[in-house]
Image (cartoon, rainbow, N blue to C red; front, side):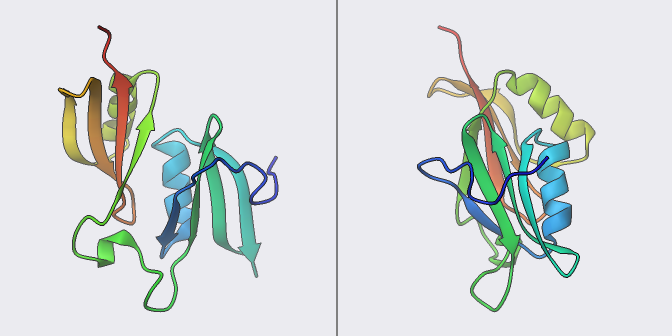
Length: 134
């Protein structure tokens, strides 16, 4: 069951532009394990969707014009999304098994997390991490 877009709104929510919203959204659900919150269709085509992890959400929307473009068209990294998960090793294994493009291998970082970086279908850079036990 889906809720209307904007029903779950954290204080900050990334808004990403995809050429293929349906494919990119399916990737976020299947590979990253995010939960479906809402999908908006126009004439049978998905143009916007919202996924979440706990109270936090991300919105993916249809790229258009020359200003709202997918990350992969920019030729470099313009931003990244950081997500804390309970078990980053299991998350990494799931992403790798699904064929995701791993950008930075899983490792312990000096800033207190175990983390890896991965690209989604449109080139957005995501970091998934778990705090290191001290």
